[in-house]
Length: 264
Image (tube, rainbow, N blue to C red; front, side, top):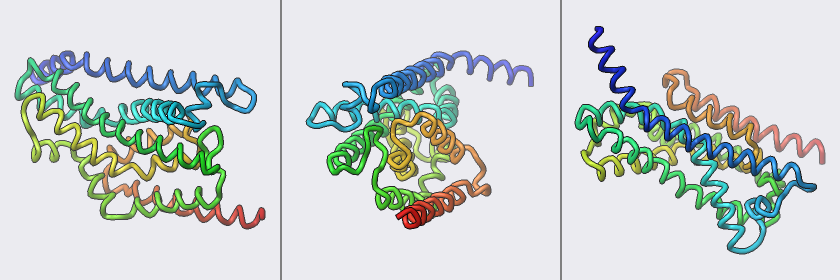
């Protein structure tokens, strides 16, 4: 038992550079978003020149700025949630080739985050379009009861669909996924990262769209959604967190409509 503990400790120390790099990148992303949020809050009306573009001004510059914001959001939110699967991948990679395990792990995480960067492109386009349709405020928060209720309802229903459960199963059981799909080498690590990341995007895209309801630059909601996604991945399936969350989202959509009806 002592020898096994020493091996695990040694493996953990060898993987430390990867974990440190992930923590630094995630921390830098949160810091960037925090500074952007603070600069917006400090301005009358809630937007600095840079943040104003990110929140959906006009032209290509605004679209690029919105993409940068969403890319930083996805890195900040999703890097912590990939840690459980990255740990499993690192252990398997170390057994295959201990000297190149860190490199393989870094490539795997890069592929995973790459899928979320691709999602950031779609989210930025959606923000840009909704803003020009006057459906979002400067904080990328919905100004339309119909849009807010629709996003909440769609996200809630998706939580109950078999497609959601199938994709979530890949995230909950990374060992089974890796054993079935394993490929050696840098290309294999990248392919696994991209594939696993694609499953994660397919699992969580609807939840991320709800950020347009609460405000895409709301750091508190970003933190909560990060915990929700991580909880779905690590909680036992019999806890039914995905379905509980779906019911909450559907209930929120109905409450949103009812509140607007009563107020109007």
